[in-house]
Structures are given as structure tokens and as C-alpha cells.
Image (cartoon, rainbow, N blue to C red):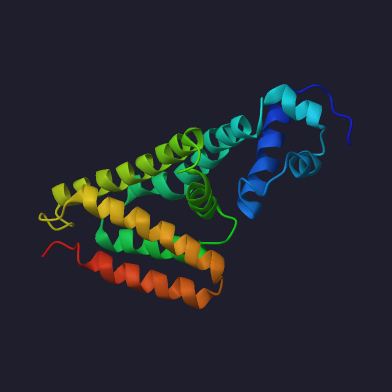
Length: 199
């Protein structure tokens, strides 16, 4: 193990980043504390100094690293979209960028594995999904007000569908990482988005 000066915040972040890699690759159950401390190049003592157990570490990772990454890649960009064509382009780009170890894939995989079995983890993960759906609701409401989204659509229903679609695509591309699958998903989503266009 490397000798480190005492830098609690940096050490904590190092542990969380290592945990995130393990959770993304192997799931929550498949990620052992030994593998996490080895990846972080620390000791179990250092880990337990910062986190009471694996659940506490997972929640901290979800709140401090995973949620901000989803925010940056999937939520903040929605604020600057001002047309259906821009929304289609954004969704296509995100579909084409999906990868097995990205934040969306990690979010979906961890939710599928743990949400029903562990309410603490489930609540932390669901907050991200709620925020993601809310961002799409806000975008679609704005689109209706500005006249580029059809006035008859129900933003909350469409937002739930969009987030579910991306969640499903992330699982699909995890199992089938080829570009052809991502391209097919992107094309199907663009076709759906066209149905939202104001007439």
C-alpha cells in the first residue's frame, strides 16, 4: 500500500471512485471490500475510518459521484434545448455514447440488483431517477409553452417513458456493445420523439 499524507477528503473520494468502478463492473453483491481497497491502494482500516459498512459507502458513492455524473451528462444539457430537433440530436448522441461502465448503465444495473432488496439503496437510487424524470418534464412543459411540443402530450408520462427507454437501452448495450445496436435504439427513439412535434 502507498503511504499517504492524511487528507481525509481526498482519501474518501479515492475510496468512492474505487467503489464506483467495482459496483459498475461487478454489481453491489459482487463487489468485495478487499477489491475496493486494493483498487484504492488503501487499507480496510482506512475504508472503515470513513464508512461504517459497504451500504454506507454505496450510498455515499450514489449521492456524491453517481448523481452528479448523471446530472452533468443527462440533466443539465436539457436546460439549453430549445427545439425538437435539438432534443432528437441530444437523445441520439446519448444513445450512441452508451457504454457498459458509464453512469447510466451503473445506475440502472445497481437499481435492478438492489432497489427491491435494500430500501436504503433503493431510495438513494430513486432520487436520481425522480430528478431525471423531472428534468424531462420541465423540458417538455417548456416545449409546449414555446410551441415546439404538441400541446396534447402529457409531460409526466412522456418523461417516464424517455427515462425508461434510456434505462432499457443501457441494459441492451451492456449485453450487446456493438454500434449497430446503439444505432438501432437511437433511430427508434428519434422516431418516437417525432410524434411529440407540434403540428
